[in-house]
Figure (cartoon, rainbow, N blue to C red):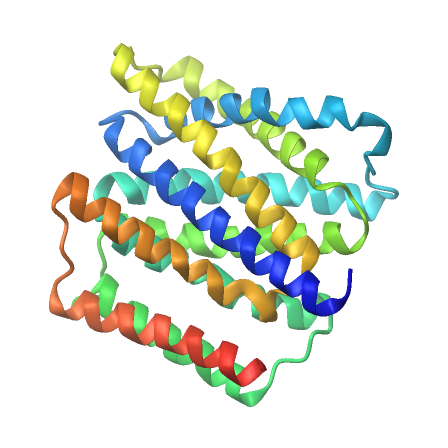
Length: 287
């Protein structure tokens, strides 16, 4: 597959990822007032069950990490991915779907920064300026007060974006070192479930059948999102496709309006326009 086709496949996968993660956020919010750790556990255990199917089916063709460095990166992907997931679930439960999604979408900018250091992918002055402007745009959304304080939900979304950026940079590294996407997803879901299990034991909340159903759907949707993002960064470099991750903002905005009657205020709308516009300009500039 030539480079052009790789980029097109990467774009397709990243958009499918946006649909999957938008639905996951919807179902997580619909699951109600449950601890974020509990939501994360059930989201992951469903993902383990689903992701084990292609792993078993293609077992003979699976490429595992070949050295200690790759294993270390895989563990780092899981740890930062799990922390980012919990922060993201907290944010989804406390601020609007669109706000939490657009803040989470700072992660592609984090990826560009980290890719510069880890993959030696050149970052131009224009890209650097775009990153600064994107963070300014997010400032309109998180609305810091005179004391420099933001809501806990917005802070959780920011921390989640940073952790996700690190996790996806690890995915990019593993993809360039021929580690199979099926194994990356299964390993993350399995180890993340184990990491969250102690919190579930000590702070379990009894769930209704409806809440359990929402978490099952969240797990299934998240698996679609995970497969999308894992294969997207395996097909193409972050700077070529990460901007298309902003399609999730559109999907989340529509779902937030339909299910929760969420509409952004003027400041948030300005922030959306700034961040998304910067992303679109980056794509045009890359071309």
